[in-house]
Image (cartoon, rainbow, N blue to C red; front, side):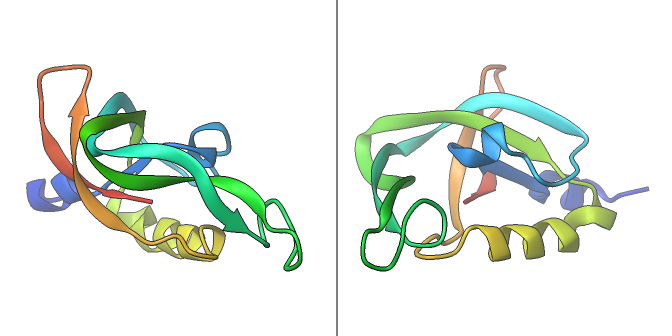
Length: 116
């Protein structure tokens, strides 16, 4: 059985391609938002959508005190965690990084998740 501490920390929030191309196993998903960030297509990418000469645009989160970004949080099992993190670190390259943000699900629970 997984510990409560691990279950609390084993969530990943997606706000772009992770929603429509979830390439990892998960056991639960919740719709909700993170506050203090806005989604913009400001990031240039040569590996997802473009080339080195003509980078394509991909979604990214920009800090913004008065904004929020809706997406989906996915709960990952302890046994799948390393696989999922390695998958995301390989997939979400070219300027992406992991941040920690408070997640507000449509239900009345607030938690802090990893956000890519």
